[in-house]
Image 1 (cartoon, helix red, strand yellow):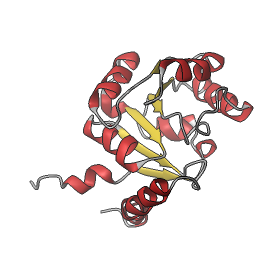
Image 2 (cartoon, rainbow, N blue to C red):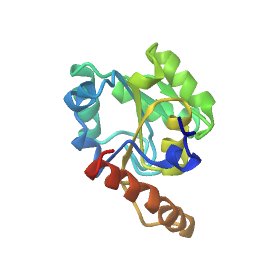
Image 3 (spheres, rainbow, N blue to C red):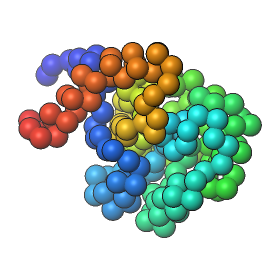
Image 4 (cartoon, rainbow, N blue to C red):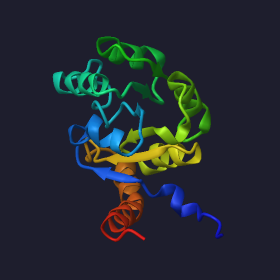
Length: 174
């Protein structure tokens, strides 16, 4: 039995273009029973205080389909709470991703084994890595906004080999 390579913790289990591409049926078929979701650049633009109607609809569709949602964000309590109130979902603020503490709080909210919970986010080095470290399924979506600070561009460049590897594995399963 070979040891898992560190880089494997950075390869998402699935990659999607948009959150709307992810359905409760798809998640349930893969054994996912709870969904932890990143906020900034996954569900909303940075500093956006309220969810858009399509996000509200998507979260309702998840709940109606048997997939509870919890928001896991590195943002402040005020920011995360104001966004989550209209959604009616629990949240973890100042999660400290990719550290494990925030993910463990989300796992406790679900009261499910980590392997039946997916983390959905837009960043490899926070969302994917943190989820994998906790035994969760890691789902990556394209960020809502790619343009911005030079560090965003650099991070996206560093993430691209791991995203390509996830797509390659999907096309050529072992």
